[in-house]
Image (tube, rainbow, N blue to C red; front, side):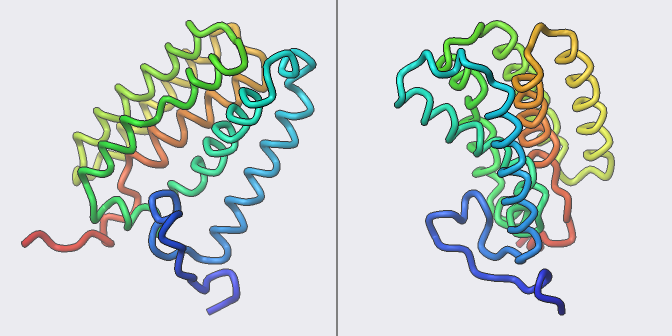
Length: 189
């Protein structure tokens, strides 16, 4: 086992995000994508983001970084196993993801396109989650993700906001709603 494959216990306060155990390689990938997103967004957001209050900007950035980190974390075996063992929590996770419209509100952005992406993503994630245990669940999720990406590309979003919207869709609709490692599931009693 290499250093990157070794698994580490996750603190209780982060288990809903990272699962009970996570490999060093997965943690490194999550961190690298989050830093990359922060660099790109900081470079391309423009001066308009500075016109909102500091608390709004900080909260928006925390939600944005959560979207970026979750777009990778939700693909990991650790996060997948945590929610495979807690199917009701998976519904709750989908329901609480109002990040995209909240970021728009915090930054004073037009909400209509963000509400469209959010609504589509949540409805599609619910449909995918209803197909839990079906072999074609990843194909359905992939199809809905592609259709959503095509529709999102037609919206009038700046490049950084388009990337945020697409990462949100990947995070919730495909990375999270799909059970990527069904062999991890505990057998039914």
